[in-house]
Length: 118
Image 1: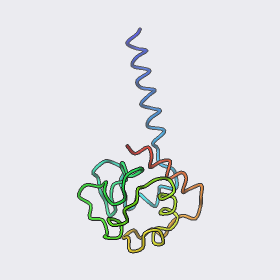
Image 2: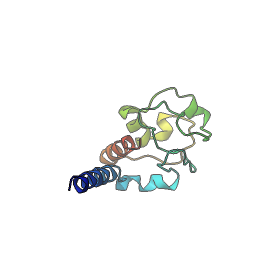
Image 3: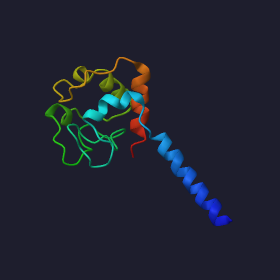
Image 4: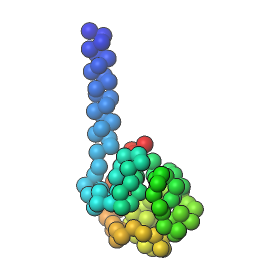
């Protein structure tokens, strides 16, 4: 009985983790270029571990633009929000073609999701 309870608890913990990391609807346009698995780059870099990291440093094997690599800031909530809302204005010369999201709820959902990618 103890083994069954332990297995059930472990399954529930994993289920909760999977649900917490489900992408929001706002992530749909991001999927075209970004992957969320560690080391899995697409047209854009993997987003795994990006939240809280220094910009232009996380994705191994990805060639960041000089603008992104030289920005020198970390991806805290404020910088992520500014970049997701308007990438070209936040980091002029970056390579991302996404125009940005003007919906603050979508921006918040994307930031919350990216924080789960660890």
